[in-house]
Length: 333
Image (cartoon, rainbow, N blue to C red):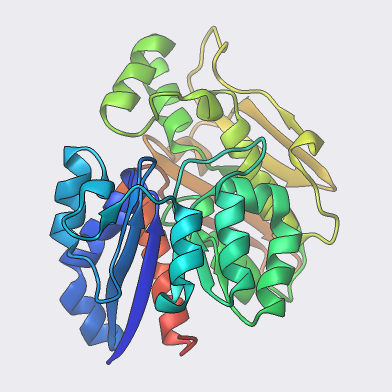
C-alpha cells in the first residue's frame, strides 16, 4: 500500500469538496489503487495547518467551517502557503493548488506551483490562471524536474478532455474545437430562456453554489476564454494568450435567448467566446443546466463529442482527485 502525502492550498468549494471525497471514497481508493491519501498540510486565506503525521479530514472541515484552518488544534498557524512549502517541502509528495483564480497575474497560485515544481514536487491544480497565462513555461519546468503537472480540473469539470487531448489524441491533428465550458453561464441562459431575468438567474446560480459571490469571470466570458487558451496551447504549436481571444459574455444579453449558448471555439488560429444560437435538436441544444460539452474535430478520429457536469465543487474536486490518483498509479511517488 503506497502512501501519497498531499499539501492542499485552498479550502473553498473545490478544496473542501476534495477533502469530503477523500473521506467518502477512502476504502475504494485503497482497494482499487492500493493507495492511501494523507493530507499533511492545508492552507486557506488566513492561515494553515501542517503535520508530518497527517491531519484529520473531519477536523480540517470542522475547523474551516468555524473560520479558518489556522485554528486547527496543535498544528494550526498563521503561516501562508509559501512559508509552509519552504519549511516542509520534503514532507509532502503532491501540491494541490485549488485556490481562487486570478487571470491578471495568476498569483499567488503561480508562485505556489513554480516553487513546488522547482523542488521536484508533483502538482495538481484546478486554478486556470497559471495554466492559461504560463502553460509553456510550467510544462517545461515540470519536465525539467521529472514531475507531473496535472490540470484536468481546469477545463470542463468531470469531462477528461485534457487527458484525451494530451494522451489519446496526441498524435492526431485537431482541426477545430467547439465547446460549452462554463456551467454557470449555461445555467443562467437556460433560466433566461424560461423568461427569468439575468439578475434572478444569477442569484439562483449563486444560491446553488454554481456561481461565485463575484461572478465577473463567468458572465463576462473570461472564464471560458481562459479555458479556450488552455485547450489551444495543448493542441497547437502556436501558443496564444487571453488577448488573442475575441470575447463577448452574457451579462448584457437581451432579447430572445432561447437555444442560446455561450460557445468557445477554435478554428484556423481563430479563438473566440460568444453567445450563439444553436440549432434545435443539436448536440449543444441538448446541453442544459450546468452541463459542459465539447466537440473536437480531428483528422483521424473525426468528430468526437463529450458532455458532463462542468460546475460545482464536488465535480471539480473529482477531476483533481483523478489527477492525484493517476500520478500514484504511474508509480511516480
